[in-house]
Length: 121
Image (tube, rainbow, N blue to C red; front, side, top):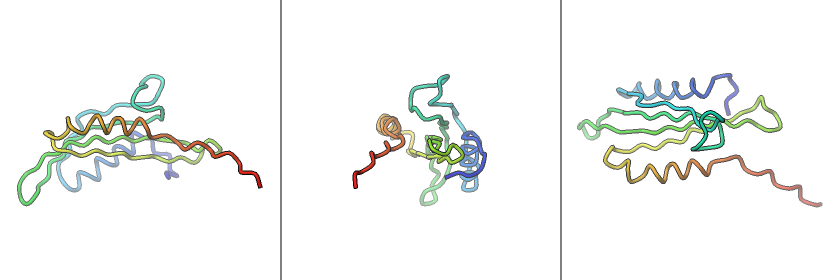
């Protein structure tokens, strides 16, 4: 739940700043999704950002690619309430091709739950 007025773009920027505390981060691409101007991956409005992370594993340098998807969903009964979902895939470049299609398919399934019909007493 986000109770502030931060935009999805600002929330994505926050993630980059958090990751930079651990090491170098390069934003490769940042794209709006789920809007009339940028439909496709999801129906919910959001931002996809692709990052290159440099870190170490057992003292050896390691480069990782990360795809972050931020989706904003408002409460239909109270638009002042919203949730921002953060969906993340991290992989080595050599592994990315094996998992990215599944990640995209997973993202397409993320949506608010249908309201359950009232149960008779």
